[in-house]
Length: 282
Image (cartoon, rainbow, N blue to C red; front, side):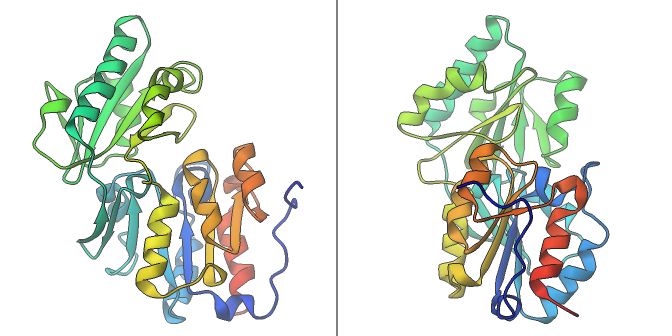
């Protein structure tokens, strides 16, 4: 059955029962200009006063998320790098480090694809920083949107860091060339389209949904007390962690089918308007 076109009116008990709100960033919380809507911040203050935990969950780097949420409480929990790195107040709660052999093999696959003419680039994501070999302005402009802490190196497979995710960028449609090239890694690892141009490779079982479940377990929070918002395939497992799961109106069709509810598009401030309705009057 197709999801409704608008979020349902929550029952009176929905607001008081909420204890955890998790939202994706790009195409979800962020507006059409890639900014956090200004009217989100009063909602965040309301959630804090009511003891509701707010958690951004993104493919973005922890350093990037922390910078975007400078106005958030210091103890905000961040699910970064598509669930492979969870941090609170600068303290690691969980991480999922890749085996170096997989890093070398996957990076080599994309290097070969580039050698055959594909316009692709690689970001190797560590706990301390992200690393790239490609240095042209067009590629770096795309990467710096998501990775505030970035180092240019000669060989991304040789960096001294705990590597938690591989992010591959395709200036064309990643679903058409990059994703098929990396598909064999899906036998042993997570290979996920995280956007129109991005494919991520992570350890098996590493995803935003697993990170949310870990956080729920740590905090003693149930799916009935959880709200999640997402728009793309890296949000798929997260839709299963909450009774109040919302796909954005602009979401990938698979997300719309998986979520229980539909929120207005990110360009229409969908997360903020839906949260305001769920939380009820001030």
